[in-house]
Image 1 (cartoon, helix red, strand yellow):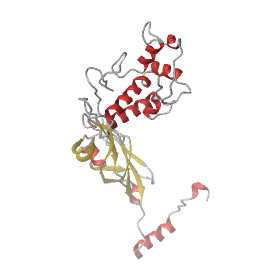
Image 2: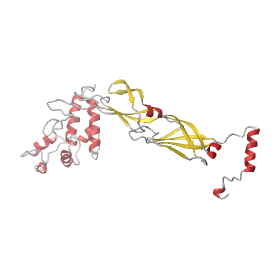
Image 3: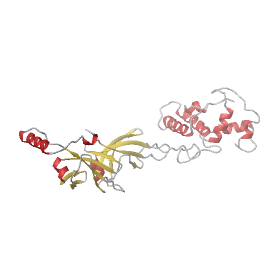
Image 4: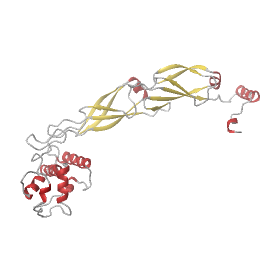
Length: 306
């Protein structure tokens, strides 16, 4: 009897996790499937891949296979111990050779692995659902407030396709949009995968976004900050009138509740005041600054002990 190294067939280490084995199987069976592969031995290769996964994809069969194959090489002749199969439940009354043959059974025999998710090679033929596609789509902050339509191009299987994507208002950074059936095509009649688009925001020096909350710097004149004022501020949702409290300093936050991104739980808009000094570029401006220096007992470094 010839030993078959199923780990070598799937191209994984013997310590590979169940998830790694499944990923390797899906990649190889897609690569060599006779419907899409031009490999001259595609049918035989697919048969070997499915045989390997039938064993390594089942925890009980994998444990039995590992116990039997310790120290063996691919293609090596060997004979299983006469009592080897007694500790494994592969069928009542079977001999060691019968048990070993069942362990190496093709997909669809014994306790096969048919199903819509991974597919099988029984009477219904091989089927596999298409892989999902994960990509990113960049939008402006204003699109999150109003909604938008974007056109994207992507490759699904062997085809390039163009899709029109509706961006609903209220989306936030990192949120994923699912477009059912727009992923890679399936095989053997299996359905296509889905397309998942992760929302990313284009950089904008005016705004900072955290979840559904938006932070915006707002320049104010020294007298507006010192005396208080009502100012008009352009925001992603339109201009708003804002009251600047008297005695405001740079860095003060004014919270506009519910004026952040209009998600299912709307965020807030935070206006961060930035006091901007007029330039002393004229005689009149310099004279005013000199007057302030003489008449105002003001030391900005007093708090630090200067």
